[in-house]
Length: 141
View 1 (cartoon, rainbow, N blue to C red):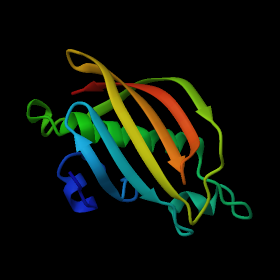
View 2 (cartoon, rainbow, N blue to C red; view 1 turned 30 degrees about the vertical axis):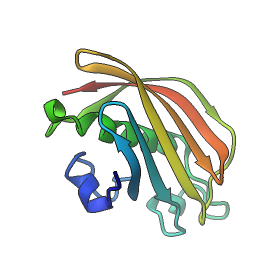
View 3 (cartoon, helix red, strand yellow; view 1 turned 90 degrees about the horizontal axis):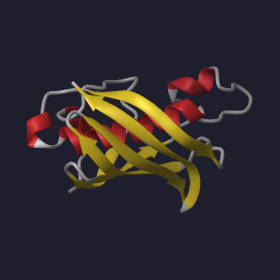
């Protein structure tokens, strides 16, 4: 199932400038999502991180993974109209700098759900090369 940014907005409440997903390439509600973020020179964070050496902040890549995971969870009928909140991040590893011109693929697999709390394993890659990986936990409200 492919989704454009307007369709993503129907699922998660994020809006510009903080909607950090451009499209969904694959989605299995409640199970898995594969999303894409095209990194552009004019992305808002590059004005300060860093003007002479633009690099995507690691915390924003974690947020991109979280938003992708939120799409997977909030696509479920029982979660429509709700919001996913960060519960925690474990074992985050940053392995590659992400810079303007890169296309970041964000894959999140939901590995545990108990009530309104869940856990996802996320990996972000550029051209198949791992940029960041983390376990993210969340609460649906």
